[in-house]
Image 1 (tube, rainbow, N blue to C red):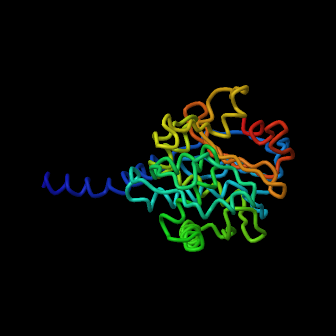
Image 2: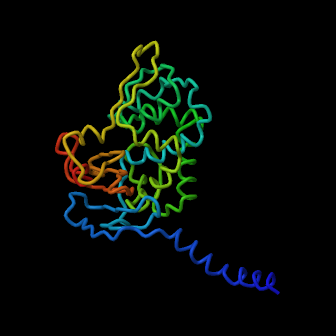
Image 3: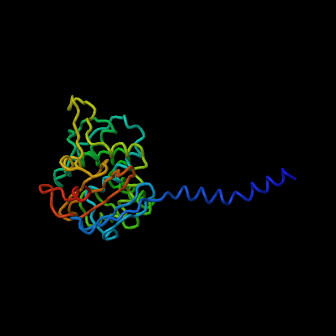
Length: 283
């Protein structure tokens, strides 16, 4: 009798235990009053990194040009598909024309230089190096066109319904929204290699014949952030972007009072020679 009674009592308690488990999983987000209306950026979204829930937004579903925020997807797909990050990869000489024609930012590798695959990931994020992105694309998929297919496939898998990639440079059909880019960054941060690269401020590449001391890469975010201070926390990493059509853009990760948040902003006034209004918005 006693044993049967205990079993029955144990069985009856299970629904309550499951409810408690669900409640524990649904961790409460701190109640925050965040107004994005005063930002320089026309488009913005702030989400909780752990849950993905939106805390505040401003024109977050309006189509934008992502500029170099495109490289978040480039590097994520690269991190997932480059099987040996210590493998030496040759910077293809044939990309030089496109780099010059598009006035592209580069990490500074020489054409024909053999560099480690890992260094390409850092060069793409920290220096926004198109030389690194084009090399990654060719190493993984053979051509940039085939690599773009992988990027769009990944966007579809992540449910980025308003995002399309056709080029690493500005193109009318290369578009997204800050909402989609925030989802992308949150997912990318789950990749250990991507997280490590994204949250690095300064990195020295492996020594090569062309660069015996390596190349010191410094995050384009931290070049603007050096003179600013975040109250109650720290910006852990970020990717900047700029074109005339896209304005100043930034996707960043910050930790405030022990909790992490993702902020994506786009279309702030200014250019590469003015104040970093996108970084000011993040701070």
